[in-house]
Length: 161
Image (spheres, helix red, strand yellow):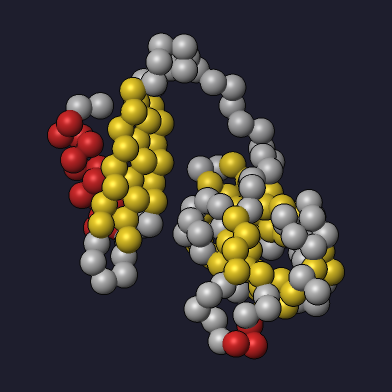
């Protein structure tokens, strides 16, 4: 990938409204992050991978577990401040069920424990199971089924008590 292609990719990502893009090709690894509120900042990392890392890797499994980012929501009203927000670890399409004919993974009011599958996010034809890193009760599901989600977008509110 030459410099002109990288510059075009940066412009495309900045205009698309996506918060973060990671791209790995043979011997190049690129991460582009943008902040969309107010001023736009772009951070681009281009890394040449060593010759061993450039070898083809095994295909990811159909249901690869993903790590969930868990943080407290700081900008919510006081009544929601006791809840933990579970955010999307990847960009993709949010699904509440493992397949159309199966029941949903979790409902509002469901008690979950660490390691329970909460949803599936499809990214590039791979279905990634999103597991909980906290135990508690689902208070609110913040995303509709079959909706696109961004990286770090809130998905669930959990009451840890």
